[in-house]
Image (cartoon, rainbow, N blue to C red; front, side, top):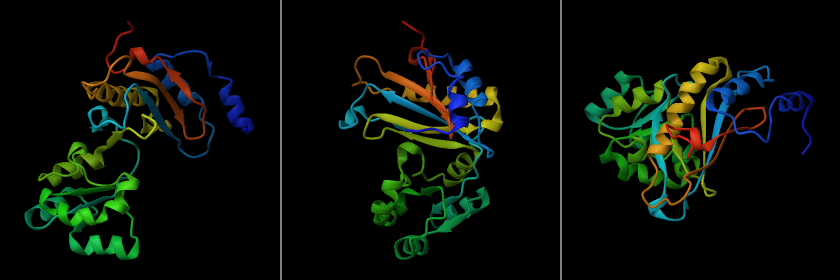
Length: 235
């Protein structure tokens, strides 16, 4: 694959044979910014588990202390008092059957997170084939199926992100924007990695975090020492 001049120059700043400490990696990621827009910094973590087994699934959600830098549009499927609470908490869209129908018939997808009360999941279940592949299906583990929809909306707006394994046993998550600066990005990254370490399944054997890397939207990957993240200490 041929890269542009800006990418090549940025890549020269990164030692591809080195495993960086968290602080070094984040500072370097900020340095490798090349785009004119505010690039997102993403984290990619490969775990020593097998996602094909139910007892080795890793999934959860965490509120990043400095947010994601993205404006989150929240759709809440609820009725009655819960719907009123969601509106007061700042949800962008609140309703029930009308939104399910809108998604089914019009292909409407102008939202970033879907939150539902438990009693509405029978209705929301109709959207499984649409929301599931996009990672938008409400889930209790992610805190998006809850009777306290106001809290869920507040957390989503504040920078709550969901982490989950893909089919290749890798977690991909945004941890903020380059404009945040190294310190805020480090805080967000440390919070995410600590949550992933705490979510280690009992069935996981051997090295849990096999590899970890961060990169800006247009920048090169920067490898992080997997033995020194999330509160772990190198053995």
